[in-house]
Each structure stands twice: as C-alpha cells, then as structure tokens.
Amino acid sequence: MRHVIALDVGGTAMKAALTGPDGALLHRARRATGREQGPSAVVEAILDFATDLRAHGIAHLGESASAAGVSVPGIVDAEHGIAVYAANLGWRDVPLRALLSERLGLPVALGHDVRSGGLAEGRIGAGQGADRFLFVALGTGIAGAIGVDGRVEAGAHGFAGEIGHIVVRPGGTPCPCGQRGCLERYASASAVSEAWATASGAPGADAADCAKAVDAGDPRAAQVWQDAVDALADGLVTALTLLDPRTLIIGGGLAEAGDTLFTPLRTAVQRRITFQKLPSIVPAALGDTAGCLGAGLLAWDLLTPMTDLTEATP
Image (tube, rainbow, N blue to C red; front, side):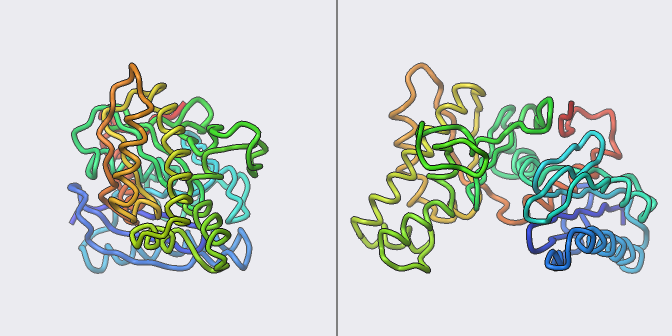
C-alpha cells in the first residue's frame, strides 16, 4: 500500500505514523527522544526510528514508504532542511533532512512542529474548507500557524506565527525571549498553572486544576482564568487585525478545558473588535496527532510538487 512516514519530534517523546494518501493512519508508534543522553543521541534516535518505520512498511504494507515528513520544535529552516535550534533538545544547525534522506533513501520534508500541526488542522481538521485560518497552540508557550489556501506561511526567516511573543502587557512579566509582558507569560498553560498554584497555595496545581475550580465556582480560580482569557483576547485581536482569518483554531493543553475556555474567550474577543470581522473561534480537532499528521502531509506534498498546497518557505 502506498504510504509515507510521518514523524513528530517533541521535547521528550516522538510520535510517528505511516499514513496513506487520504491521511489514513496505517500504523502508529511512539518512542522517547532520549534527550538526557544529549543532542547527538536524539538525532540518532530519530534516524533509527525512521529506519524502523520504513522497515515496518515493507514488512506489513508490502512496499517501502514513498517519502518521509518530520516536524521538530524550535527554529527550523524548512527550505534548507536544517533544524536550527531547539532549547529542549539541545541541538544547533542539524542538517536533519539530509541525514534522514541519506539513511532512508527517500525524499524528506522537514517542518516546524506547530506549523505542521496547523497545516493538518487547516486541511483535514477544524479549519477544513477555510481559505484563511490562524491556528494557535496554548501549551507550555504559545505559538501559531498562519494558513492561506491550504498552506502554512513560514515567513521570510521562518519565524511567522510567534504570537506568544506579542506584547500584551507592556513593562510586565519578563519573558525568556528578552521582552516583558509577552502573551505567553499570561495565557499559556504554564502561565495559568503558575498563577493558580500561587493563588490556591497548592504548589503542584496546574491549569487543568484551575479550570475545574472555575467550574466549581471558586472565585480565586475565576479571577486567574479571566486574567488569562483577557490577555489571550488582547493577543488574538492583534493577530486577527493583521491577518483577518476566516477561522481561528485554538489547540494545545489549555483548549482541553472546552467551553470553560471558549465561552468567555469568544465573548472577550467580540468585545474588543470594532471594524474587524469576527472569525469563527473553534477548538482544534486533531489533538496530539496534529503534528504527526501534518508531517505526513508535508511528505505527500513532496510527491505532488505542482500542487499549491505546500508549506510556504522563503
């Protein structure tokens, strides 16, 4: 059966699949990155995992994969196939596409994890059918993917979509990026976890606990949650003013709160817009498979080079 290798590399684990032309998951697997052994070990783990996935396809699907797609965190030069930098994996300037292509003997696409996830959400997930969408992942940090006509815009230098570093509270909390008052310091899952742990006096409390406390009517939780929603709405209105998306897709850990997040968020965004058009604000549909599915789509794009549905690169 014709298929491609799809590999999504995270900070601690790798999710992989063999996918068919219609996006069907023909095989799924997961492994640790082995980052505690250093960046070279992580690269070797990726190469070994991809090799085993190719062998699985030959053994169980009757032929080798036609291509491979890999999504990785951090700074990515998709055009040249370089994993430029990832703080949580410790690597710099890894020619990952060339290494994988040499090991597998296949064409390989390299993409950014959030942009790959956004690509999948836009084509086959919550944004399916929307000509322009913005995907925002609310996790440890906040990142976005700008979708236009079925592709995802990487920007001139590969930094497009870094919505988490829009300043929403000038002079506010310092951010590791060097600015103060960045959106992700107020509205990411980690920021909500930190704020709720402080407000509740429970050091181990997290954003999910805060959401449960909101639903239970805890006024302290309600205040923490509303502060995060207000900051998020400020950042999103800035983004939609610039991009005018038809659909705004919210994913990541914080989105798992469901209506506890989406009901006040829709209200907060609507209150802030004036001349702008309010996009549909919807939860992501693909969960933690989005990055892997997006990597698979990048691989299929290599096999149909004339299509317009490719990840935009400089």
